[in-house]
Length: 239
Length: 278
Image (tube, rainbow over all chains, first blue to last red; front, side):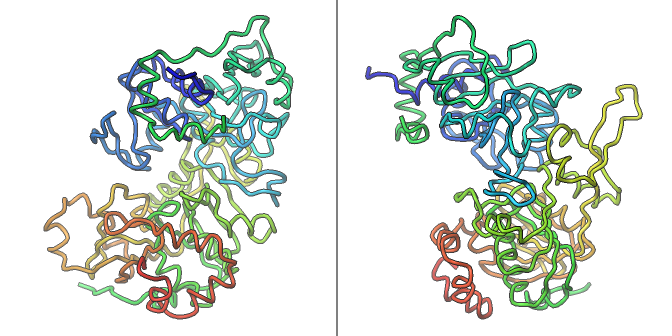
């Protein structure tokens, strides 16, 4: 077995988001979350529902098992039986996320996608985030446009939860008294200093930081030979 | 019964400056592009465009026809950022009402149901509230007392949608995997125009397809346009996929050059210029 790559640790860290999730829809956005969700579905989260990226629910072998057009998908979100992993162009210490624009909203320096479904996601179903290139441009003191709602702005929201943030450097959660971001695990080969250096706000770092677990032999085989034989995962993180 | 067939240019001729247009499809999927091209050929301007935005938004904005957009996103799917929308936003050339995808859907439902608003658990805590200072909230009158956003009805003057088949009466059929929100757009509109790949006899609609493919009902439709390849270069499954090569040309060619090369003449001229995919 060749050495486990950074991308493969990221796959495991994303897959873990759906552990014990039960019979809910996994909505991964991005290559590595998609590989992670499919890995979870084939191993420790067999009840997950997955889409083909459009309107069909499919099993691991691609067999169609259901129909989920956008109108039903948006309704399913509000029913809460879904855990989405979205991207983030910016994210702050409380998990406020931005994918709309950079700079002043009225006349942005860089127009991005728009708020998309981030507002409805964060108020209705568990929402995790995936950041393929951890940097101070992404992990910022304050986001320019709050799309996904963070813990400091979700006080009265009954279904708000951000289980984890996965980046190419580590895994983060909000298990602190004020729900600010905490370093939960480091991917092997990454130092605490490296994470601090790449983060634009003060991160809570426990005295003992574990490493992100590696894949089992079976998981590695599934990732490399079955789910992502073309190694598209490596291109997303660049290492 | 009324034969509602008309040409795309007749549809555009019924639109007026300052109107609110609802445009069906999603991103770069099953967009009524032949109708959008007809709007571009007409002089109509100062439009408010309500759309799950794709190149429909990009082209209308690039051509300077839009005063205000109501969108949760604008994307070309395989090319995540719509270049002309992006350029327009970055030079402050268009007003924007930016709302969440679900708020948008419930806004269409409110309009279709003749309600002034619908309560939605979305938006609160986000900057959607900051950038839309007119948005109001509503508190549950029941014991839970939760506060929701009261999404205003997204009523439109005219809806433009593209489907796979239709009859002359305005019954529209989709044959792909997702209806998107095209029926809702028609129900939320004062007038609705349906373009289709092919007009067929009513009886033929369900000859080889299930009745639930009949998405758009004739009582919501004002005009029917036969427009083969009318969604080009966006996808129109199962008739054709997205013309990725042409979409790339659209995304990388300066707008004046693109408009001159492809949009100077009628639909037939466009199809000839755009090549075999069109």
